[in-house]
Image 1 (cartoon, rainbow, N blue to C red):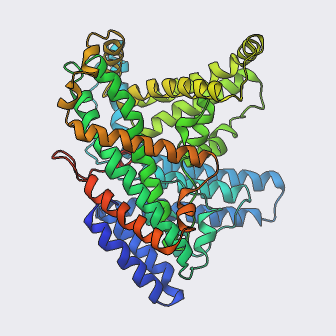
Image 2 (cartoon, rainbow, N blue to C red):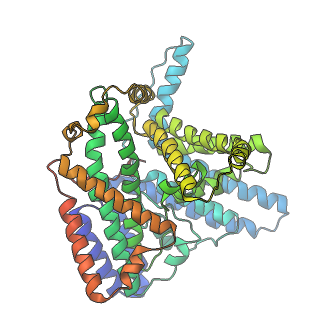
Image 3 (cartoon, helix red, strand yellow):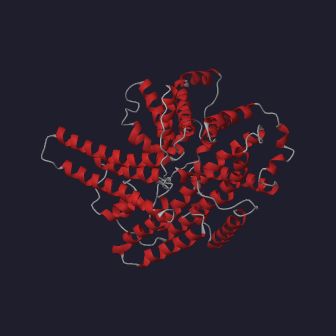
Length: 498
């Protein structure tokens, strides 16, 4: 079930209405049933997978708690705890690898053996990637690690824990919640909070704007150009690549924002997943503000356990590169994603390694790092680097990515920028003007966000007549402009494929 579907517009009010009228003791069971129904709308069979992951990690939590109370020496207790964690990770990641990476592994093994003239006939496993499997698997595994580290109690109520893993607002595309935040909030069903509901509604409205008005509109142009890059080369590809950066931001942050808003209607606060990432002045800062829940997951559960920055400079660089390569692979079973992740890792390593030289240059040139001009320049360079890496993320293959880069460098059609040729790529002139205005609105909103100003709270502080007019106009605008144009239609969120 998509957020941007008629089904959800019926499902969500029904869930809320029933939740707030039924007795407190069955509220969690109702949310659990609603969450499983929400997930099963894609494929009912895959509810077995999320239930399996839930059962394994739930049992691992109880076993870890039991191991801590063993009448044995500390070495034996630690060995038992590590064994439980290893089994939990191996089983959950094994399921993930089978559904997401089995064909990728078999194909590349066949290609590797072919290089040494050994012909293998690898089978093709006929499986459909379950929606959101990477998200709920990581969320469940974080619980195992949190219990292991004594950062949270082992949940004994299976249904409450199952709700933590399957909570429908953030189930299929995040944010990847931590047990320390979400599980504790689910422990006590909430009463209806009018102020939270108002704020949640504005969040959902902004999320729908990002998805329906911006992301889906940009997708028409980007899909046209990238789908036939041999025809639409040069400046077409440059424009499409710049717009794809905005598209994926609006698409993914749109989902996270809707999820946050929906959860607030239920009295739950989910973590912030994006913080105006394209205003970052370095790639490292960008990754602290982009997909925050995944970046912090890898930091806490992979980078730090590998040694982080505690084992010397070169080991730190290796750890960072490894994390970003794994992050790329997490996004999909293709080398394009691995290249995208590796490139972002290299950016950060080069940035850290050259920092002393850059600091000396800034000092010698008597530049002011905190000046507006300097920060704009840094943000522009950061955006250019990140946007270049998106080429690999969007391309269908590594070869396509290099062909696209070559076409962008060898620009032979600069006139298309001003002669109206862009309007033949799915969006007419009116849509492009609307798109430009909406991107400027997004930029303004992000600038306010970076300055700590939450526009939704500013709106809610206004007189009631202003609030109602603003909401009415905004809803009408999203409905009207979200469907404006003959090729525009509601589409699945990009991150559903991961």
